[in-house]
Image 1 (cartoon, rainbow, N blue to C red):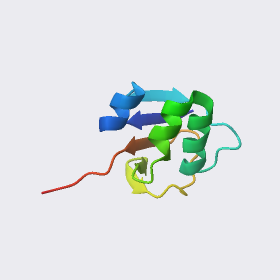
Image 2: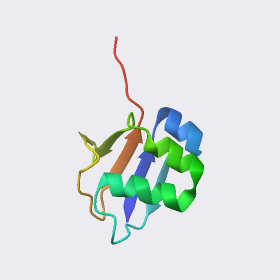
Image 3: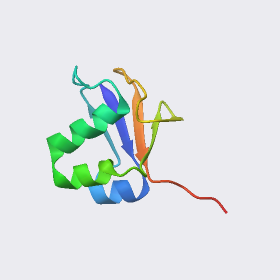
Image 4: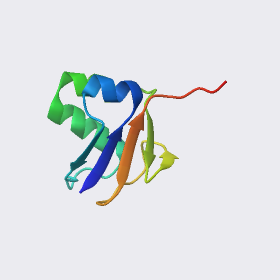
Length: 84
């Protein structure tokens, strides 16, 4: 089981802030997960998760989309943040 967290505008667009999902065997990286969710849930999800601007974290550590994931991980998706 994976815990998925969606923040800010992604949470608003997708209508969910947190969920638990089974990790399919073919999904090994964050990128695989994003493609899987888009294919499974349709256009809105594909569009939201396909952006190159989406930031990701696994177990609260910022990572690239090629990060390996395993059952029990928490994967977070969020738009880029700016400081000032």
